[in-house]
Length: 378
Ligand code: PEP
Ligand code: MN
Image 1 (cartoon, rainbow, N blue to C red):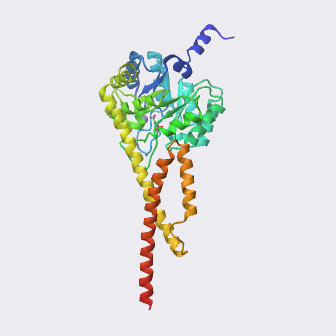
Image 2 (image 1 turned 60 degrees about the vertical axis):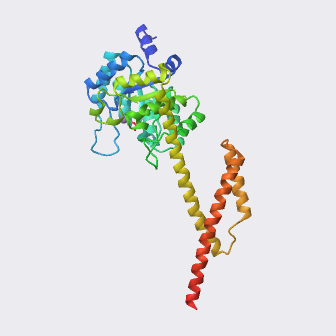
Image 3 (image 1 turned 90 degrees about the vertical axis):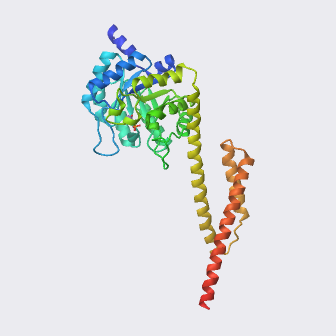
Protein backbone atom coordinates (compact mmCIF):
# COMPACT_ATOMS: atom_id res chain seq x y z
CA UNK A 1 0.00 0.00 0.00
CA UNK A 2 1.20 3.51 -0.78
CA UNK A 3 1.84 5.99 1.99
CA UNK A 4 0.05 9.35 1.84
CA UNK A 5 3.26 11.03 0.74
CA UNK A 6 3.67 8.57 -2.15
CA UNK A 7 0.05 9.03 -3.21
CA UNK A 8 0.62 12.79 -3.19
CA UNK A 9 3.84 12.40 -5.24
CA UNK A 10 2.03 10.27 -7.84
CA UNK A 11 -0.88 12.70 -7.97
CA UNK A 12 1.52 15.56 -8.53
CA UNK A 13 3.39 13.92 -11.40
CA UNK A 14 2.96 16.39 -14.25
CA UNK A 15 0.67 14.84 -16.81
CA UNK A 16 0.13 16.17 -20.32
CA UNK A 17 -3.48 15.02 -20.46
CA UNK A 18 -4.28 16.74 -17.15
CA UNK A 19 -2.61 19.95 -18.33
CA UNK A 20 -4.54 19.85 -21.61
CA UNK A 21 -7.80 19.21 -19.76
CA UNK A 22 -7.16 22.05 -17.35
CA UNK A 23 -5.52 24.75 -19.48
CA UNK A 24 -6.28 23.72 -23.06
CA UNK A 25 -2.67 24.27 -24.15
CA UNK A 26 0.61 22.69 -23.08
CA UNK A 27 3.36 25.30 -22.76
CA UNK A 28 7.04 24.34 -22.62
CA UNK A 29 9.71 27.03 -22.56
CA UNK A 30 13.35 27.46 -21.74
CA UNK A 31 16.78 27.77 -23.28
CA UNK A 32 17.99 25.72 -26.21
CA UNK A 33 20.74 24.35 -23.95
CA UNK A 34 21.41 24.37 -20.22
CA UNK A 35 24.55 26.51 -19.95
CA UNK A 36 24.84 27.18 -16.21
CA UNK A 37 22.87 26.95 -13.00
CA UNK A 38 22.42 30.77 -13.03
CA UNK A 39 21.04 30.80 -16.58
CA UNK A 40 18.49 28.08 -15.74
CA UNK A 41 17.45 29.73 -12.49
CA UNK A 42 17.04 33.15 -14.11
CA UNK A 43 14.87 31.66 -16.89
CA UNK A 44 12.79 29.42 -14.63
CA UNK A 45 12.21 32.13 -12.03
CA UNK A 46 10.83 34.48 -14.69
CA UNK A 47 8.70 31.76 -16.29
CA UNK A 48 7.33 30.58 -12.94
CA UNK A 49 6.47 34.17 -11.99
CA UNK A 50 4.44 34.63 -15.20
CA UNK A 51 2.65 31.37 -14.35
CA UNK A 52 1.86 30.32 -17.93
CA UNK A 53 4.56 27.68 -18.48
CA UNK A 54 4.08 24.02 -17.53
CA UNK A 55 7.62 22.70 -18.13
CA UNK A 56 11.07 24.28 -18.23
CA UNK A 57 12.96 22.90 -21.22
CA UNK A 58 16.77 22.80 -21.63
CA UNK A 59 19.02 20.56 -23.69
CA UNK A 60 21.72 18.67 -21.76
CA UNK A 61 23.11 16.94 -24.87
CA UNK A 62 22.98 19.02 -28.04
CA UNK A 63 22.95 17.17 -31.36
CA UNK A 64 24.94 19.61 -33.48
CA UNK A 65 24.96 19.45 -37.24
CA UNK A 66 28.67 20.28 -37.43
CA UNK A 67 31.45 19.13 -35.08
CA UNK A 68 33.20 21.74 -32.98
CA UNK A 69 30.01 23.51 -31.84
CA UNK A 70 28.82 23.52 -28.22
CA UNK A 71 27.63 19.96 -27.47
CA UNK A 72 25.84 20.62 -24.16
CA UNK A 73 26.90 20.14 -20.55
CA UNK A 74 25.66 16.54 -20.18
CA UNK A 75 25.02 15.17 -16.69
CA UNK A 76 26.07 18.46 -15.08
CA UNK A 77 23.10 20.09 -16.82
CA UNK A 78 20.74 17.47 -15.38
CA UNK A 79 21.88 18.38 -11.85
CA UNK A 80 21.15 22.05 -12.59
CA UNK A 81 17.72 21.12 -13.93
CA UNK A 82 16.94 19.06 -10.81
CA UNK A 83 18.03 21.92 -8.53
CA UNK A 84 16.11 24.51 -10.56
CA UNK A 85 12.96 22.43 -10.16
CA UNK A 86 13.49 22.25 -6.40
CA UNK A 87 13.82 26.06 -6.18
CA UNK A 88 11.09 27.15 -8.62
CA UNK A 89 8.69 24.19 -8.58
CA UNK A 90 8.63 24.15 -12.38
CA UNK A 91 8.75 20.58 -13.83
CA UNK A 92 11.68 20.03 -16.19
CA UNK A 93 12.13 18.55 -19.68
CA UNK A 94 15.15 17.52 -21.70
CA UNK A 95 16.07 15.82 -24.97
CA UNK A 96 17.29 12.22 -24.98
CA UNK A 97 19.06 10.60 -27.91
CA UNK A 98 20.28 7.31 -26.48
CA UNK A 99 19.56 4.67 -23.87
CA UNK A 100 22.23 6.17 -21.60
CA UNK A 101 20.59 9.60 -21.81
CA UNK A 102 17.31 8.06 -20.65
CA UNK A 103 18.89 6.43 -17.59
CA UNK A 104 20.71 9.64 -16.66
CA UNK A 105 17.61 11.80 -17.14
CA UNK A 106 15.49 9.48 -15.00
CA UNK A 107 18.18 9.40 -12.31
CA UNK A 108 17.99 13.20 -11.99
CA UNK A 109 14.19 13.33 -11.87
CA UNK A 110 13.49 14.83 -15.31
CA UNK A 111 9.69 15.06 -15.74
CA UNK A 112 9.30 14.96 -19.52
CA UNK A 113 11.53 13.65 -22.29
CA UNK A 114 11.58 14.74 -25.89
CA UNK A 115 13.16 13.10 -28.91
CA UNK A 116 15.04 15.42 -31.26
CA UNK A 117 14.52 15.72 -35.01
CA UNK A 118 17.86 14.09 -35.81
CA UNK A 119 17.13 11.01 -33.68
CA UNK A 120 13.62 10.25 -34.98
CA UNK A 121 14.94 9.04 -38.34
CA UNK A 122 16.77 6.10 -36.74
CA UNK A 123 14.32 3.31 -35.84
CA UNK A 124 17.03 1.29 -34.03
CA UNK A 125 17.81 4.16 -31.67
CA UNK A 126 14.11 4.94 -31.18
CA UNK A 127 13.41 1.32 -30.26
CA UNK A 128 16.36 1.34 -27.85
CA UNK A 129 15.09 4.52 -26.17
CA UNK A 130 11.53 3.16 -26.03
CA UNK A 131 12.80 -0.03 -24.32
CA UNK A 132 14.73 2.06 -21.80
CA UNK A 133 11.53 3.96 -20.94
CA UNK A 134 9.31 0.85 -20.79
CA UNK A 135 7.48 0.69 -17.46
CA UNK A 136 8.33 4.29 -16.46
CA UNK A 137 5.52 6.79 -16.06
CA UNK A 138 6.93 9.77 -17.96
CA UNK A 139 5.54 11.73 -20.92
CA UNK A 140 7.49 11.57 -24.18
CA UNK A 141 7.22 14.08 -27.02
CA UNK A 142 8.53 13.12 -30.45
CA UNK A 143 9.75 15.85 -32.79
CA UNK A 144 9.16 15.48 -36.50
CA UNK A 145 12.12 14.04 -38.44
CA UNK A 146 14.22 16.46 -40.53
CA UNK A 147 12.65 15.14 -43.73
CA UNK A 148 8.90 15.60 -44.39
CA UNK A 149 8.26 11.90 -43.85
CA UNK A 150 5.04 11.39 -41.92
CA UNK A 151 5.49 7.59 -41.84
CA UNK A 152 8.78 7.94 -39.98
CA UNK A 153 7.19 10.32 -37.47
CA UNK A 154 4.17 8.06 -36.98
CA UNK A 155 6.47 5.02 -36.68
CA UNK A 156 8.53 6.56 -33.87
CA UNK A 157 5.39 7.59 -31.95
CA UNK A 158 3.99 4.07 -32.36
CA UNK A 159 7.21 2.52 -30.97
CA UNK A 160 6.75 4.54 -27.75
CA UNK A 161 3.05 3.68 -27.47
CA UNK A 162 3.86 0.00 -28.01
CA UNK A 163 6.51 0.19 -25.27
CA UNK A 164 3.69 1.15 -22.91
CA UNK A 165 4.45 4.90 -22.68
CA UNK A 166 1.05 6.28 -21.70
CA UNK A 167 1.56 9.91 -22.60
CA UNK A 168 3.07 10.29 -26.04
CA UNK A 169 2.82 13.51 -28.01
CA UNK A 170 4.36 15.10 -31.09
CA UNK A 171 6.29 18.31 -31.69
CA UNK A 172 6.14 20.01 -35.07
CA UNK A 173 9.51 21.78 -35.58
CA UNK A 174 9.60 22.17 -39.36
CA UNK A 175 11.53 20.37 -42.11
CA UNK A 176 14.74 20.67 -44.09
CA UNK A 177 13.58 21.63 -47.55
CA UNK A 178 15.05 21.98 -51.02
CA UNK A 179 14.40 25.67 -51.14
CA UNK A 180 15.69 28.12 -48.55
CA UNK A 181 12.89 30.41 -47.42
CA UNK A 182 12.97 33.08 -44.75
CA UNK A 183 12.40 30.31 -42.17
CA UNK A 184 15.15 28.07 -40.85
CA UNK A 185 12.92 25.02 -41.35
CA UNK A 186 9.92 24.99 -43.67
CA UNK A 187 6.71 24.48 -41.63
CA UNK A 188 4.88 22.36 -44.30
CA UNK A 189 1.68 22.47 -42.22
CA UNK A 190 0.13 19.64 -44.21
CA UNK A 191 2.53 17.16 -42.54
CA UNK A 192 1.32 17.75 -38.93
CA UNK A 193 -2.23 17.86 -40.37
CA UNK A 194 -1.68 14.41 -41.86
CA UNK A 195 -0.27 13.10 -38.57
CA UNK A 196 -3.40 14.45 -36.82
CA UNK A 197 -5.60 12.61 -39.36
CA UNK A 198 -3.75 9.38 -38.73
CA UNK A 199 -3.39 9.71 -34.94
CA UNK A 200 -6.22 11.97 -33.72
CA UNK A 201 -5.54 11.11 -30.05
CA UNK A 202 -1.90 12.20 -30.12
CA UNK A 203 -1.49 15.84 -29.01
CA UNK A 204 0.72 17.88 -31.36
CA UNK A 205 2.46 21.00 -30.12
CA UNK A 206 4.42 23.46 -32.25
CA UNK A 207 8.05 24.52 -31.79
CA UNK A 208 7.98 27.89 -33.56
CA UNK A 209 11.60 28.63 -32.53
CA UNK A 210 13.18 25.92 -34.69
CA UNK A 211 10.79 26.62 -37.58
CA UNK A 212 11.44 30.37 -37.51
CA UNK A 213 15.18 30.35 -36.78
CA UNK A 214 14.83 34.03 -35.94
CA UNK A 215 13.25 35.60 -32.86
CA UNK A 216 11.34 38.12 -35.06
CA UNK A 217 9.47 35.33 -36.81
CA UNK A 218 8.56 33.20 -33.78
CA UNK A 219 5.29 35.05 -33.17
CA UNK A 220 3.87 34.60 -36.67
CA UNK A 221 4.62 30.89 -36.64
CA UNK A 222 3.04 30.54 -33.21
CA UNK A 223 -0.06 32.37 -34.48
CA UNK A 224 -0.29 30.14 -37.51
CA UNK A 225 0.04 27.09 -35.24
CA UNK A 226 -2.91 28.36 -33.19
CA UNK A 227 -4.96 28.48 -36.39
CA UNK A 228 -4.01 24.83 -36.96
CA UNK A 229 -5.44 24.11 -33.49
CA UNK A 230 -2.12 23.14 -32.02
CA UNK A 231 -2.21 21.59 -28.55
CA UNK A 232 0.53 23.88 -27.30
CA UNK A 233 3.96 25.37 -27.84
CA UNK A 234 7.60 24.65 -27.10
CA UNK A 235 9.51 27.92 -27.29
CA UNK A 236 13.19 28.67 -26.73
CA UNK A 237 13.62 31.31 -24.03
CA UNK A 238 16.97 32.57 -22.75
CA UNK A 239 17.77 35.41 -20.31
CA UNK A 240 20.37 36.85 -22.75
CA UNK A 241 19.69 35.38 -26.19
CA UNK A 242 22.62 37.09 -27.89
CA UNK A 243 25.07 35.32 -25.53
CA UNK A 244 23.45 31.89 -25.98
CA UNK A 245 25.89 29.08 -26.80
CA UNK A 246 23.46 27.56 -29.31
CA UNK A 247 20.55 28.86 -31.41
CA UNK A 248 21.16 32.43 -30.26
CA UNK A 249 19.21 34.05 -33.14
CA UNK A 250 15.90 32.36 -32.38
CA UNK A 251 15.61 32.59 -28.60
CA UNK A 252 13.24 35.05 -26.89
CA UNK A 253 13.81 36.77 -23.57
CA UNK A 254 11.34 35.81 -20.81
CA UNK A 255 9.66 39.23 -21.26
CA UNK A 256 9.27 38.73 -25.01
CA UNK A 257 7.90 35.25 -24.39
CA UNK A 258 5.35 36.54 -21.88
CA UNK A 259 4.32 39.15 -24.47
CA UNK A 260 3.94 36.45 -27.11
CA UNK A 261 1.65 34.36 -24.89
CA UNK A 262 -0.37 37.46 -23.97
CA UNK A 263 -0.83 38.27 -27.66
CA UNK A 264 -1.81 34.72 -28.49
CA UNK A 265 -4.14 33.85 -25.66
CA UNK A 266 -5.06 36.86 -23.60
CA UNK A 267 -5.60 39.80 -25.95
CA UNK A 268 -7.53 40.72 -29.04
CA UNK A 269 -5.20 40.24 -31.97
CA UNK A 270 -3.44 43.49 -32.81
CA UNK A 271 -3.46 44.99 -36.31
CA UNK A 272 0.26 44.19 -36.57
CA UNK A 273 -0.28 40.53 -35.69
CA UNK A 274 -2.94 40.26 -38.42
CA UNK A 275 -0.51 41.72 -40.97
CA UNK A 276 2.16 39.29 -39.74
CA UNK A 277 -0.19 36.38 -40.20
CA UNK A 278 -1.03 37.52 -43.72
CA UNK A 279 2.68 37.80 -44.55
CA UNK A 280 3.33 34.32 -43.24
CA UNK A 281 0.58 32.85 -45.43
CA UNK A 282 1.86 34.82 -48.44
CA UNK A 283 5.31 33.43 -47.93
CA UNK A 284 3.81 29.92 -47.93
CA UNK A 285 2.08 30.75 -51.22
CA UNK A 286 5.41 31.98 -52.67
CA UNK A 287 7.08 28.69 -51.72
CA UNK A 288 4.28 26.67 -53.32
CA UNK A 289 4.37 28.83 -56.50
CA UNK A 290 8.08 28.13 -56.87
CA UNK A 291 7.41 24.42 -56.47
CA UNK A 292 4.73 24.63 -59.19
CA UNK A 293 7.18 26.29 -61.57
CA UNK A 294 9.87 23.74 -60.72
CA UNK A 295 7.39 20.91 -61.41
CA UNK A 296 6.23 22.45 -64.72
CA UNK A 297 9.78 23.01 -65.95
CA UNK A 298 10.63 19.38 -65.18
CA UNK A 299 7.48 18.18 -66.90
CA UNK A 300 8.43 20.09 -70.06
CA UNK A 301 11.95 18.63 -69.99
CA UNK A 302 10.47 15.12 -69.92
CA UNK A 303 8.14 16.11 -72.80
CA UNK A 304 11.22 16.91 -74.88
CA UNK A 305 12.69 13.49 -74.14
CA UNK A 306 9.38 11.92 -75.13
CA UNK A 307 9.45 13.90 -78.40
CA UNK A 308 12.88 12.40 -79.18
CA UNK A 309 11.56 8.87 -78.65
CA UNK A 310 8.39 9.54 -80.68
CA UNK A 311 10.33 10.87 -83.64
CA UNK A 312 12.68 7.85 -83.55
CA UNK A 313 9.62 5.55 -83.61
CA UNK A 314 7.82 7.78 -86.18
CA UNK A 315 4.92 8.20 -83.77
CA UNK A 316 2.46 11.14 -83.83
CA UNK A 317 2.95 13.83 -81.20
CA UNK A 318 -0.69 13.66 -80.15
CA UNK A 319 -1.61 10.24 -78.76
CA UNK A 320 -5.34 10.38 -77.95
CA UNK A 321 -5.40 7.28 -75.72
CA UNK A 322 -2.58 8.50 -73.56
CA UNK A 323 -4.10 11.97 -73.25
CA UNK A 324 -7.47 10.50 -72.17
CA UNK A 325 -5.65 8.46 -69.53
CA UNK A 326 -3.88 11.58 -68.21
CA UNK A 327 -7.17 13.52 -68.00
CA UNK A 328 -8.84 10.67 -66.13
CA UNK A 329 -5.98 10.30 -63.70
CA UNK A 330 -5.56 14.01 -62.87
CA UNK A 331 -9.33 14.54 -62.57
CA UNK A 332 -9.63 11.66 -60.11
CA UNK A 333 -6.67 12.91 -58.06
CA UNK A 334 -7.93 16.50 -58.09
CA UNK A 335 -11.43 15.47 -56.99
CA UNK A 336 -9.94 13.51 -54.07
CA UNK A 337 -8.19 16.72 -52.98
CA UNK A 338 -11.37 18.80 -53.18
CA UNK A 339 -10.46 20.65 -56.42
CA UNK A 340 -13.08 21.25 -59.10
CA UNK A 341 -13.06 19.13 -62.25
CA UNK A 342 -13.39 22.14 -64.53
CA UNK A 343 -10.51 23.99 -62.88
CA UNK A 344 -8.09 21.07 -63.13
CA UNK A 345 -9.09 20.20 -66.70
CA UNK A 346 -8.57 23.82 -67.81
CA UNK A 347 -5.10 23.84 -66.31
CA UNK A 348 -4.16 20.47 -67.79
CA UNK A 349 -5.49 21.37 -71.22
CA UNK A 350 -3.19 24.38 -71.14
CA UNK A 351 -0.23 22.27 -69.92
CA UNK A 352 -0.92 19.69 -72.63
CA UNK A 353 -1.04 22.36 -75.33
CA UNK A 354 2.32 23.70 -74.19
CA UNK A 355 3.75 20.19 -73.98
CA UNK A 356 2.63 19.44 -77.60
CA UNK A 357 4.16 22.65 -78.83
CA UNK A 358 7.44 21.89 -76.98
CA UNK A 359 7.42 18.42 -78.56
CA UNK A 360 6.66 19.85 -82.01
CA UNK A 361 9.52 22.34 -81.76
CA UNK A 362 11.84 19.56 -80.62
CA UNK A 363 10.93 17.18 -83.45
CA UNK A 364 11.07 19.98 -86.10
CA UNK A 365 14.59 20.72 -84.89
CA UNK A 366 15.55 17.03 -85.00
CA UNK A 367 14.07 16.73 -88.51
CA UNK A 368 16.03 19.79 -89.76
CA UNK A 369 19.22 18.39 -88.27
CA UNK A 370 18.80 14.97 -89.87
CA UNK A 371 17.94 16.42 -93.30
CA UNK A 372 21.07 18.63 -93.10
CA UNK A 373 23.12 15.56 -92.27
CA UNK A 374 21.65 13.51 -95.14
CA UNK A 375 22.34 16.42 -97.59
CA UNK A 376 25.88 16.51 -96.35
CA UNK A 377 26.32 12.75 -96.94
CA UNK A 378 25.01 13.14 -100.52
C1 PEP B 1 16.23 21.72 -29.65
O1 PEP B 1 15.04 21.60 -29.28
O2 PEP B 1 17.03 22.51 -29.15
C2 PEP B 1 16.66 20.92 -30.82
C3 PEP B 1 17.92 20.50 -30.97
O3 PEP B 1 15.67 20.75 -31.66
P1 PEP B 1 15.53 19.88 -33.02
O4 PEP B 1 15.71 18.45 -32.62
O5 PEP B 1 14.15 20.23 -33.41
O6 PEP B 1 16.56 20.39 -33.99
MN1 MN C 1 17.67 24.70 -30.14
